[in-house]
Amino acid sequence: MPMPAVVPVVDEGLGNSSYLLDLDDGRALVVDPGRDPTLYLAEAKRRRLSVAFSVETHLHADFISGSRELAAHGAEVIAPASAGLEFPARGLGDGEEVDLGGLRLRALATPGHTPEHLAYLLLDGDAPKAVFSGGSLLVGAVARTDLISPEETEPLARALWRALQERVLSLPEDLPVYPTHGAGSFCSAPAGADRVTTIGREKATNPLLAAPDEDAFVRLLLGSLGSYPPYFLRLRERNRRGPHVYGTPQPALRPLDAEDVRQLKNEGAEIVDVRSVEAFATAHIPGSLSIPLRPQFASWLGWLVADDVALVIVQDPAQDGAEVVRQALGIGYERLAGAVQGVDAWTEAGYPVARMALVDAAAVTGRVLDVRQDAEYGAGHLPGALHVELGELTAAAADLPGDGLAAMCAHGERAATAASVLERAGRTAVAVVVGGPDEWAAAHGSLVAGA
Image 1 (tube, rainbow, N blue to C red):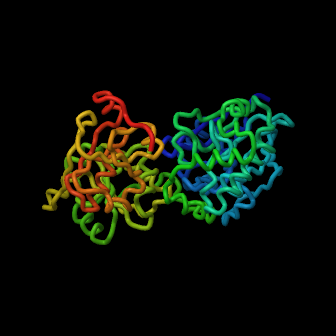
Image 2 (image 1 turned 180 degrees about the horizontal axis):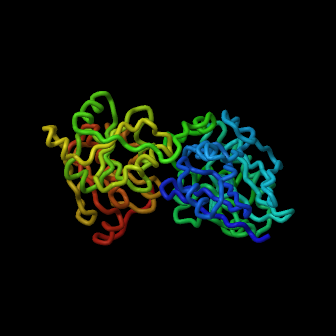
Image 3 (image 1 turned 90 degrees about the vertical axis):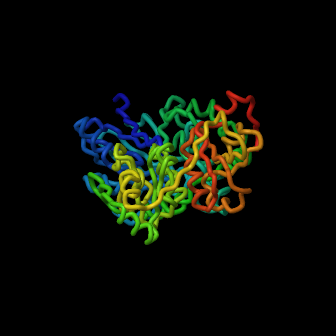
């Protein structure tokens, strides 16, 4: 039979792809679903399918699995047996298969990204049709092996080399490869990469697979690992135990007034302002954290905010509160106290607001704090710029020299977040650079490369 339809469902912010597979018999299978089941159920309904299977390649560290949500709609969960799930699932080991009615799904043990990791080979008879590689083989990369413990990082990297050589790269060169982690994922896929590939393409172009032996592969992989959000250390266990099932639609944000916000703030709630950079700079509740609502909202929420405190959302009336909920729940942030529309009610109640300056990148002078990731900074930065990754800024703020810092990223959103972190740390005269090093270079000349 021809290759069944595979429909990618991409989370641009987290850099991940789930896949809905049409089994051509009125049923569908979903691989590595995110927590919100809406898109999978809607796509299945559009194709007149029911979701019969929800397949997990591994215990995810970067998002809450949606398998329990799909199970509530009738799907059978399939997962690595060694994951030890504490909710109903069919556990598979290496070489075991699931009969899909004309097609078969074969588990391939591919430890490395995680110890229990499985890839899944889709078969029609004995003919391979596709491999869902999860976090083993990615487009131009492999997934990181340092999410378990420092002691396990190198052994897992070695296990991944062997798994790739013995189980994955021996598959037909024209076989489609559908990875879970892709461009934008902190699980290590190169920026701008395509989201699907083939075995042959990766053998020819993947720099890690060009390593001549296991030791070289391990050196290359471990040398390429950057930082990752601290919530990665919590979600594996939450996915193993089984997250709470919300159903559809997911809960809405409760409307809050100024007195609600004041009381929640006094009780220790975190105020997260999701409005634009410009709106935040014009006026914001003192002590609030700016994380503009965009596809990457969840990553920075998970990097900078504890998940055991109540969250108060400040949003623009035109913004979609349901998107805030979807992203927050998607990485396990359950304590959503509610939302207030802008700061007008706050000011009308007589409470003060804070403001900060916006500076065009081409006109910035003085001390610039570049808060991009290390690799971005190394590729080119302003001469004399200070550098602290945004995820490390809360801990580093007290050690930065003086006040009057201008925070810079690539566009301005991370810079606004950084400026709000500095303000919360007691820094004064903080500015937000709108634009990034490229805009500065267009006006002033070359950037400086290197660490």
